[in-house]
Length: 419
Image (cartoon, rainbow, N blue to C red; front, side):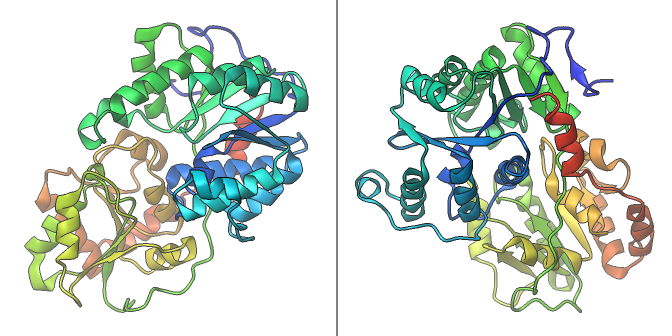
């Protein structure tokens, strides 16, 4: 079956399975987003950082900064991990950062990188390679799981620096399959990124069989496919915190979770709530504002105080869990997903899900969600009303009771045998 195990029949080479002497995790994405609430991709990179830092194999980290590459040794990795997870505060900006970086949190993050650095190198392949050869054992494994720093310079430098294996996690093919939802020029940038991954990676990790099928459809036009494995992303459920101020748990409400961007379907939900009028249940839209969505932003800005629809941004994971756990259901009218963490997390909490019928969602959750076409308002309104009044709630509770969410332990047991 597609996505089962490791594909070797159309690959450039086979996957070596000897243990690596060290691992090098690229943390460029997390550093660039220092101080922001983590997105789905950020959370995956954090999960890799947490897990690999407790493995017996020594963990190093690479970051492409404004002033070049920074290499962290195992001790430096632990220091930066504590700051990325909020256990420690970022330090003060150093003089270099004050003259080269605009964003305050990025200044502080890059300054701490330099304070804890094992080594630094200019942004040239030969300089990166020389730094890695000096500090890492030959044959180390390089992992890039954040869609960042996948440049020819980095990939060539890592290989020349002694990497025995280069593994890249690809989260989706949305920029190529749905360019209408992207920033101008992103589709071309993403295609070039995938071409570099195809040329340099010894292993491509996919979060779903659907992502693998879509990405490999594009890669086939460029040559042989690299070895690949499908490993579903794990679910980590924080202990629910306090509900944000102003939310009445006794009043029925629904939740939409995710960045407010065009493909997520927030416009469709706002249309539904306008149609329901004064009798509508609550709708809590949880997520940061994204891009190319000015019409939706204007509608959110025009929401009346005390109305059924509220926009909640800046919630931490515990607050999101609290909001979700008290909801009548999660609404997920997304038009495209590589994986879809919110429906999986909601189901793991026993919260009913109404979702568009996307291959990646069905791959992980099967028939558990209530699936509805995004174009069928009646189908959505009927499902929402049924959950609001409780007619479907008991049935859904039974359906989710036997669900076992994907675990990070299973993900890493599979991936780390190959990286």
